[in-house]
Length: 334
Image (cartoon, rainbow, N blue to C red; front, side, top):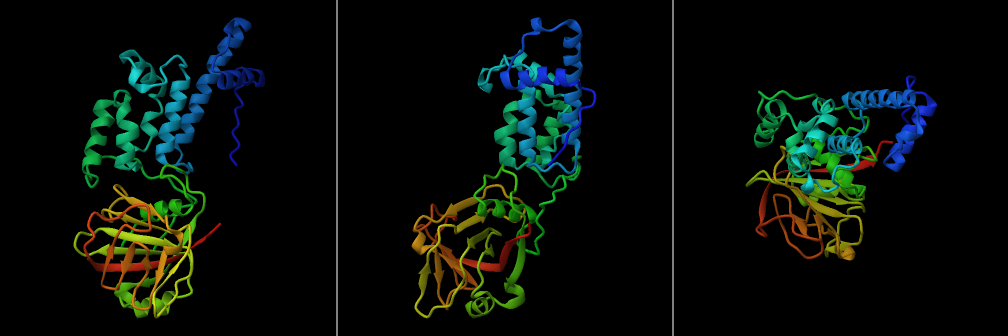
């Protein structure tokens, strides 16, 4: 819980501000000039508080949420602004830009995904300082490896996920954690999961036999596979225990999912596919590695189809070759 102290704002003045926050407008005719001046001063104090919050390295919020809340605050300063951005006039953009100009320098836009930048920031490009920020952001999202672009450092997170992987990064692990909790990509992480490495192909071997030796009877596992042909990443989450079967049997669960990423550098362009036919969610067979209803893995190769999950996680149904694969067991740390 965060406790905010506002020693410079009198309780009766804060009551006026609260009426405005919840009602959208206040009638200044009800107050004398001295109270109106105090309200204006208090508004300045609240802006300083907002700036102080978004400057913090320890702010527990995804950057897209920071941006959205700053926008809401800026819009709330002038309730007469149109609710639909498409109806904004040139003057409306100027007003909004003026409202949040002190906050803009402290938003860490480089921490957004290119999808978030395109969908949530570009529509407001008229309020960004063109010469200092907008052009740099365009360059960055066109080439994220550009070292010449100055960036604010990442925020710290008490729920940051550390992962021992040669395939995926912390960003991938955080997104997978959100999927496990059925959160949207823009939501804050609710549970900090530990990813415990059980198996790595290059270390332990790629054979189905080795997989079952290590992973049978282990539940709540995440499998990630790096495809040799194009560095694509495929994977799946299995909440139930793996088993060996001589005949090949399906296990039922409503919480499994499969996924893909275009590469290991970022999380853009991911595909998430949740199980639809629950009794065909997981496939246990002694001659297969970790396999799901639509994602089969045989050690050094595998394939994907579209039968039991929401959608295909690959454009191609051809077999793929495996460069590396890892299996993690996950559990909550809090």
